[in-house]
Image 1 (tube, rainbow, N blue to C red):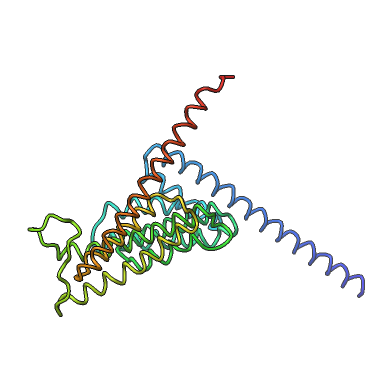
Image 2 (cartoon, rainbow, N blue to C red; image 1 turned 180 degrees about the vertical axis):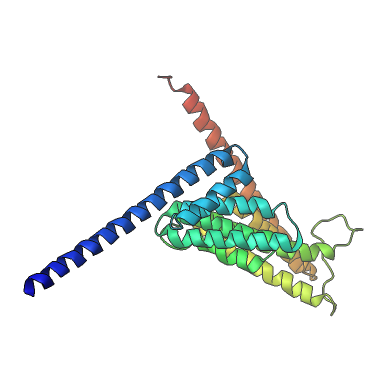
Amino acid sequence: MRVFRNFTTVLSLIALLALAAMSSGCEYAKKVIAKDKLNQGAILYNQGRTKEAQVFFKEAIESYDQFPNGWLFYGATLVKDYRSLAGDDRTRVANEALEAYKKALSLASSNCKLRENAISYIATIYEDLDKTEDWRTWRLQLADGDCATKDMKATTYYTVGVKYWDCSYQETTRYADKAIQDPFHYRNMDYPAALPDKQKAEACVVKGLEYVEKALQEDPEYVDALFYKGLLYRERQKMTKDQAEWKKLNDMAEKISKEASELQKKKEAAAAEKAKQEEAQPKG
């Protein structure tokens, strides 16, 4: 009886090992098939044959759904799709693209390049859908974590700051007096019906300056951020009725603009000198 029990145990172990081997082989085969589909799809995508590429990318993730690149590539084709659509169809396909990139992000682990790619696309899709809060939330993720370089942080904060500037600009422009040539003249937004718009614009200026300053903390020579700092003071100037305060803001904006222009010239001169020195180097 003991021999039989031992023999049965051995048979069970062999069966389990065989099943594991079969399972492992099946998993490996799925990976190989998925990689082949991804490669074929990439060739077609690079040839501009997006629809055909999409079929291969979809088949790849259906074969093996653990490759983050498969979801990134499939998402890219969906982005091209929804940008040619309108209405509910556009929203539906855009949401499919969002899910694809979020899946890619969940599989990216510590791969910074994959994470940046997925997060950037997710933010872009929300921007295309006019979901500014969602865009901002995801965009700011690029400035978080171990993957965030100083340059990435500066660019992210600058981009968010510019969006806040645009928020204010859209409001103040609607109240511009076309008879006045000065582009920074006072906008009458102080009557009851206009106050909500003014409050929105003022809040956007505050947040815009906050993020532009963050960008400049990461890169003090970020010329574009400096220019937009001046433009945000211009927005505040447009909403200021008191002449003395309006003049103060005007002078501050001009000072910042001058600093930005001088910094731009300095950087252009340095770049020209570097190019000149490289040109003078002996060719090997």
